Length: 255
Ligand SMILES: CC(C)(COP(=O)(O)OP(=O)(O)OC[C@H]1O[C@@H](n2cnc3c(N)ncnc32)[C@H](O)[C@@H]1OP(=O)(O)O)[C@@H](O)C(=O)NCCC(=O)NCCS
Image (tube, rainbow, N blue to C red):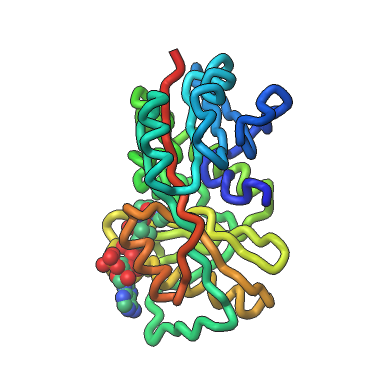
């Protein structure tokens, strides 16, 4: 399967050739540049050749991220190769036909479309200021994070993703971006203004996404979620999601 979830990290990934990487267990590699940073993401199936793989991609990178199926054995290989653990992700998948989740009370006014983009960007920049998906390097400040997210939103707009905007009275307080791929929909990004958290706002938007899927004959609603993001995990659980494809992300700075 192509790296369907990759765009969650990179707005404009440039696919890298794997010709010189044969036999190393590399499934995919892509690169994104930001200012002086050249970030390369490598997806590996097996950890045995990690050292060789890193040498190969380090030449053209300032940062290498390695994505591996989660497993205790990969941790020791990564440590040996000088990589640090960054995060563990799982795919949350809701079987739309089977989920009977409903909302008793709806308090948000939900609208579709890319109006109020600047407020969406402000909420995103505040919400993802320390998120390793967008903060690729320690020297990136708030303006850098905002630039990266702005590119991300532009890519999302260009791909005709669907955006749900949640309003409390006249204030935009939350958004959720959904990409449709055939009979499947993927939640790319969702965030709630910090002042409005833990009030059920996100649940309303995820419910809106589920309703959209029900009406659009979409069979699966999924998202890639960090296991440390317990609020997001809990929301997917409410929607009766199943969790699978645990994946660990490691990082190393190229010298
Ligand atoms: C993750 C995030 C979107 C959650 O938004 P939120 O509006 O605070 O979430 P909600 O209030 O809807 O849900 C919060 C909690 O209430 C629970 N809850 C809400 N409505 C509920 C209901 N009707 N029944 C049972 N539980 C409910 C949720 O399960 C969740 O659990 P928690 O206590 O572990 O957090 C928000 O914290 C955020 O913007 N974080 C930064 C960005 C981010 O991580 N985005 C998600 C990944 S892209």
